[in-house]
Amino acid sequence: MTALAPRRKPRFLQHETVETIFGYAYAMLMVDVLLVVFNLPLAAMLFVTVDPLASWPFFLPLSLTLAPSLAGAFEVFRSLRQGPPRPFAAFWRGYRRRAGTAFVAGLATAVIVGLALFDATVMAGTVWAPLLGPLLVVLSLGSVATTLFVVTGLVVFERASLKAVAKASVFLAVRRWYFSLVALAMVGLIGTAVLMQPVVGAALAPGILLYAVFANAQYAFRRAVDDARA
Image (cartoon, rainbow, N blue to C red; front, side, top):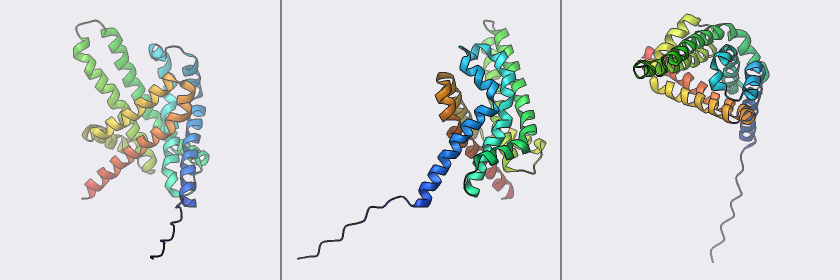
C-alpha cells in the first residue's frame, strides 16, 4: 500500500506582495483626493453644473489647474518604484518642481481647444462644418495627447527643458500615434466617469486611469530614447 502523498499547504500571498498592493491602492486613492483639492474650483463647478459640456467657455479657464496637478500625480506614480508610497510628499514635490512649466503646456492646450470649439460653434450648420470639423477634432485631441506627453516628460526627465520635452512630445504624439490613442482613451474614460457620477467618478477613476496614462507615456519616451541610442 503506497503512502498517502502529503497534503500541500495552501499558498498565500507573501507579506511584501500584499503590502505592495495596498500601497499602490492607497497611493491611487490619495491621488484622487489631491487632484480634487488642487482643482477644487473646477471640481466644485462640475458637481453643481447640470450640463458642463454646454458651459465649456466657463470651464475652460478653470481647467488650467489640471496640468500642474498632473505633474504632482505623475510624480507620485514615478516614486512608487522607489520605496514605500508617500503620496502627499511626492505629489507636492512634483507640483513644486514642475507646476510652472506644466501650466504653460496646459495653457497652450486650452487656447488650441478653445479656438477649435469656438470655430466649431461658428461653423455649425454651415457648409464648412463637414470639411473643417474633423480637422478641428484632430487638432484638439492631438494637443491634449501632446500635453500628457509633455507633463510625463517633465516628471521623468527632471533636468530637461520645456522646449526639449515639448519637441519630443509632439514627435511621439504624431509618430507613435497608438500611444496617443491609449492616453486619450484613458482620459475619455475619466471624463465620462466624472460627468456621469461626479462624486464616485472623481473618487475612484482618475488615479488608476492616470497611472495607465503615465505608464503609457513613460514607455513611449523610453522606447524613443532606446531607438535614438541604437
